[in-house]
Length: 121
Image (cartoon, rainbow, N blue to C red; front, side, top):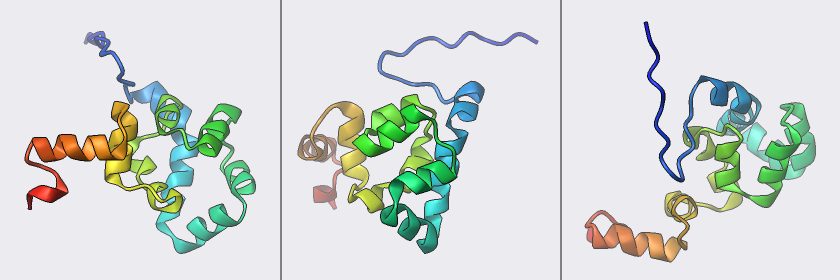
């Protein structure tokens, strides 16, 4: 069996096996936000909570900086990253704007222009 070489897509970080391994600690931490206890513990002491899950320094810095794209580059899965959004006061449109280099308002306007935004029923 041969493995196809993935083609590069500018601005895209592939979430493959090695990336999954790299991101395991941060994704495990994000998964813990399913529980109120996990969310509360993170809010109470972010540094201790990141240490509990053994995030590497780059992952910790991305969390400190609220750097969503950096977290993706550090192995964060967007599906798990969504768990931290509400803790940080971010919604889906905020994430969309961050991922596309737009403000939340610009991203929402784009969605509206495509007929898929909140202002289109």
